[in-house]
Amino acid sequence: MKFYWKVFFTVMFICTVCLSSCGYVLIHANFRALLNSEEQIAADYADIVYYTLDSELFRRSNAYTADDIIYYGASGQPVYELTTQATDLLQVAQSLSIRNGSDQVPFALLDAKGEELCSSLPQQLPRDTRAADPQLALGRVRYAEGRFFVQVLRPATYLGQLYYIEIQREVSHVFTAWQLQYQILLKTMCTVLAAAALITLLISRLLLRRIGLLSAATEGLAAGDLQQRCPVGGRDEIGQLAQNFNQMADKLQLQMLHLQEEAESRERFVAAFSHELKTPLTSIIGYADLLRRSDLPAEQRQLAADYIFSEGQRLDSLSMRLLELMVLKQQQLRFTPTDVTRLLAQLQQQTEQRLQQAGIRFSCAAEPALIPMEAELMQTVLLNLLDNAIKATPAGGSIRLHGRWHGNAYL
Image (tube, rainbow, N blue to C red):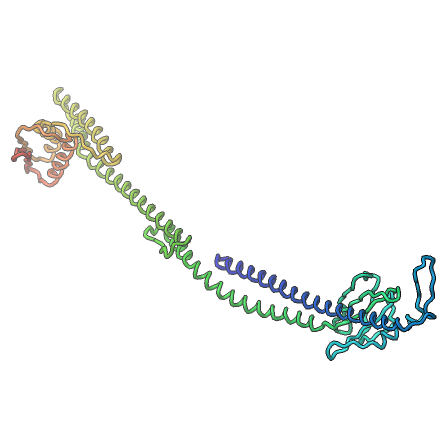
């Protein structure tokens, strides 16, 4: 799965959880507030009924005579029982009409066991007075015939007896509003999530486009394109990553250039070394062949052997010097005063056998001089020049090598 899809689904999951959680909390809180409000109204109506009944009974109790009262007890206090008041309570309850504006407040009067004594309620709901507190009103939500009701059972004490006043209020509109709010929440969530999905997809693609460019640059670099770079395009984390990538690519390219230079240096060394070996090896092979085929006098045999030995030493010294100069990067030359006449004499001796085989005359004349130089390298240069001259000169030709002072320079 691509990274921007991960970002997209993560954002959508967070938005869905947050919207659904917040919507549920708000709707549930609003629902509970409305339901509690309806319960409180029902409880207030029950209080109104209670105090209206109590005040009506108190008013009627002032009209009772002594014949209606039976005294008993030994404390001297007037403990009494009204013989007619229970009947009056039912009559008052049945005749009582309480209105809230233009609406009448229906109620029911129950005894302590929950049996109905009188009722003006339009709906019969289950009653459970066993769970009711004799001191507090009990509110419940009931469902009957496709409608919802709040049922409040308020304890009331009349004539020393416990009664309950039942009030009912239909709250179907609260549940309807609750369901409607959830439908609105669902539609709102769909709309918001659709917009969030589009915005998140566009933003994630826009933000991750730079990562795509960086990925493409990385693939190009891995494929060997050392010129590949990524545009920075900002000072954020992605821009810093692109800048670090470019710095890495620059260092890698520089290191590759160094490696190429070293490889080329080694190739040049091999080419130069093989070229430098050719001239002394040719001389060595020539003198060795002369010793092998000809029966030379002892003096000439000794000279040939000495020449082979000296050329071998020079070849060893030359190879080590070239190694230092071309591979080990020791570019500092060691100049020592060298006798030019002796250097040219050695050169003539080294090429004498080859010149004779080629049928070429060689003359060497030089003014005496003591010049600071790298003797072995200069001898190698002169041997290469003379080797090229031998190749370019036909049999019977001549090669001349002269050295003289020209002002402060020796040519």
